[in-house]
Amino acid sequence: LEGDPFSGRYDPGHRYLYECPECVELKVEGEDARRWVVWSASGMYAVGQFDGTGFRPEEERIWFEPELMGRRYYAAQTFSQTPDGRAVLMAWLTLSTTNAPFTQGLSIPQELGLRRTEEGLRLTRRPVAEYAALRDGGAKAPRDFEGELLEARVSGLPRKGVRAVLNLRGV
Image (cartoon, rainbow, N blue to C red; front, side, top):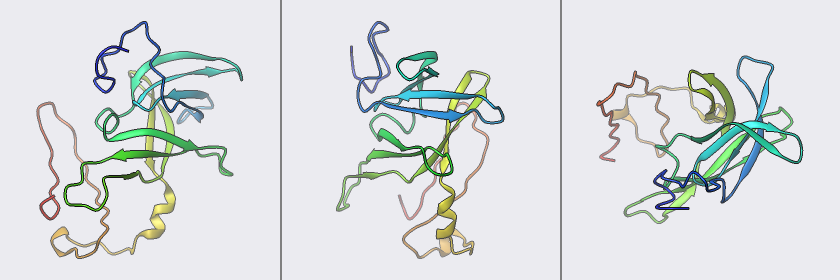
């Protein structure tokens, strides 16, 4: 491995799935097909076939949401073979938490999937459906919010050169 392992500049001849490996079979959204996904702590992954002994990549060296992986979203692992067939991911969050009594934690559980895009098969994730049971059903304007936990839904179309910032209570 050459250079900073979080920079994405890897020696092409080197193996890149080297720490906290994970291998999980996922259904391709909208298709009958299934593929295996292998990834490592750094957030790079490969999509392909697994025959029980060997993995044959069809696509590889893909970054799993690079803005979240790397130094903040690390060593993601799944609970698989669940009764309903989902693969549920949790990751280690290496957070910078100024003035907090903690420095790191776990992500919320997220259901994984595979979606065919113009670039090829790509991992998807969304919070598990069980989180809906935590909602109180009442929508409030952020300025009127007094609690400790907040769920915010924000949507928009990304444009090159545009930065979106969400400021909650000065954070």
